[in-house]
Length: 66
Image 1 (cartoon, rainbow, N blue to C red):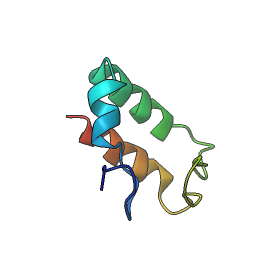
Image 2 (image 1 turned 120 degrees about the vertical axis):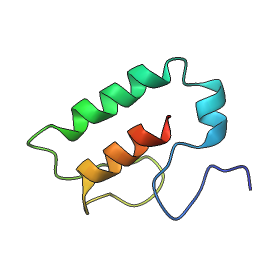
Image 3 (image 1 turned 135 degrees about the vertical axis):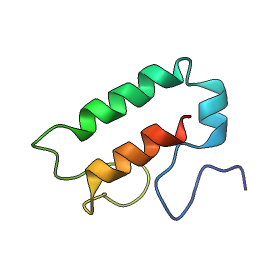
């Protein structure tokens, strides 16, 4: 209801609005992480481990920042 949970990984709108001061810098960091050759999975604090296309997931999150 508040936009925190969902079926796919995303950056919740309240987080984007209140906690992300520099969206371009965060997007750039996510893209740098996506290029790490050793990246196999993303461990998240709430939810399932992301093992399928973690690089693509990070790129989608970066794109979602605008």
